[in-house]
Every structure is written in structure tokens, then in C-alpha cells.
Length: 235
Image (cartoon, rainbow, N blue to C red):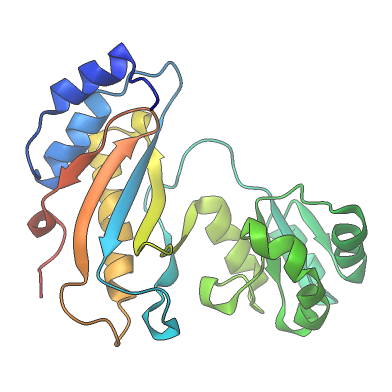
């Protein structure tokens, strides 16, 4: 078992052992007790009442956070053809190409980007990259807006801080919601935006209580449970 550091213990003690607190109070506790020397990321974990083993209970989506994610801007690659190449370049894509980019990824295992956007007509070629892109979560998908004819919009949203989320095998959605330096207000708004998006993504097959718990934490800090009433109107 790994040892818990003194700073973590101090932060844990300061946060307290309340079962759950209102969202603004939870955010304040996380921000106030972040102790790392770098600007920590604030993460959200939402435990859902779904069984991801069943395809009709999969929860997946994207949300453009009102205040972005902070930190380094994401590098976006686009696989397209014709006029869409110019559109991608004009929108600020970092790498743009067609079959040549597919070949580069396939033959060189080149993955010097954080997000990949493709036009529908290129997906037959992009499909060949499944084994390379899939395990890294980089495969373009219509559900996340990365397979689209509107490449300009897709690029701008990713650059603005669009977050992609997907429920894991344990029924939990993990997602970043900004940096500690954002302060309470901006982080609270970002978290609300994420929670609203996840709630809208509720599968019709999900029965009973959908959102079971929400916990927020900084990169190095302890988790703080959030009172669900401060995020959603429970069913």
C-alpha cells in the first residue's frame, strides 16, 4: 500500500469528512486545499446507474466547457479532401491532409496530435487506423462530432476546450473541468455544464437512479463528495 504524504493528509483533514456538500462549497474546498507546485487540474467523477456491458446503456458525449480547460491548446489533425482542407487550415488545424496523412499514421505510427477530425468521405481510409487510434481514444466518431462535414466548427470547439467523456467499465464518467487557477466561479460553471451534458446523455434503457454520486478533486488532492441536489433535480 502506498504511503500518503503529509500535504495530502493535511488537505484531507481540511476538507473534512462530511458525506456530501453543495457544489460551490465542494469546489472551494478543492481549490483552497490544492497544494502542488503546479496548476492542478480539477477532475470530476460521476458514478452512474448504468451497466456499460450493455450497448443500450453506454453513456458517451462531448461538451464545450464555458471557460475551457486551460493549459496547452490541443493539437488538432484533420483528414479531409478538396475544399475541406482549406477550411481546416483556415480554422486553425495543426495538421491537415488526406490519404497522405492516413499513410503517415499507419506506416510511421505518427500520433503527434491530441484530437483527430475526419470528413465522412474519408472514413473508409481512416477505418484502417482503428488498431492505432482506437486504444488511444483518437478514432474519429460521429457521436463526438469528430466525423463531420463542418470541420471548421469541430476544430474551433476542440480548441475552445471541448471535453469528450465516456462511461468506463465500472459505470463512472471521469472528466477534467479546468485548472485550480480558474477560481471557484468558473470551475463551478464548468462542472455544471459537464453534469448537465451527462444527464442529457441518459440512455432510455437506464433504470432507477441515474446519477449515484459525484466527486471532485484536484490532481494531487483528496476527493470531495458533492450533494446531488446542488447539481440536478433527482428523478
